[in-house]
Image (cartoon, rainbow, N blue to C red):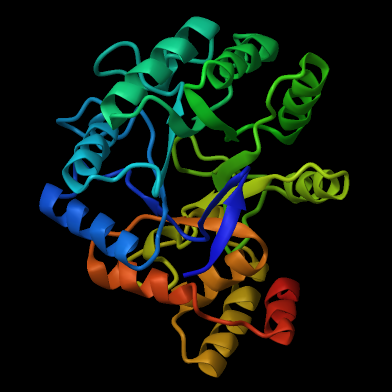
Length: 321
């Protein structure tokens, strides 16, 4: 297992997504996947307080509730970092993001308290603002998060699905107010690159842009580190499964060019497409967040942490398309 850092914590360079745990994934299977991940050295798990309100029969909070129960049953404490997100849970049953709780100071405080109760902890390891809420001044949201850190209720802060200019505004607010800076950023990202003149089809998704990566590099040069966590890194199996189609945003000549180089590296390494994609992300300091439904998928992802791409292979992958 590879390891990296999020803020001041050392975590596995592979993050296990728990979105479907407690809902679509049977409890026994979810527990077995978590156990296997931890046994292999995995120490980073991701959830959100709204998973999965959009699936019929569920209301949100199921994933956090399941993880809290698993932690109690296994006696897991601070050896596993559990990241959660708030702000996207609907306030009206049966509705969607149009009624989301948002990021007011009151909403942040209440949601964080509920997440702590469900996860069975007095201190959340990593707490993200799930989506932007432009109805609330960013300074109010930042102040609410800072208060949680000051009270010892949150260890590390993150932002998910925010425009790059709002990341910079959040940084400036934190610096001016001497508040803790969100140091973990969660976005959609994979080896294949989309067209940015078309929207993603998936609800609530925001893709990493070249500008965001440039922001992270520039901040690092100034001594301010950020960790990027990438969700949907394997594009729901589209790299390897013929029954999975790509989002239309990938319908451009660069996709075929990148897949051709990807297959060359697959042939050279003996790894799978998925494993090369995950290794490429980790080699660039990005933490892939993988969702799996069985141990075979999980083992494939875990084995990717041991895959060593050569500098020449990484260069070819980078420059394709």
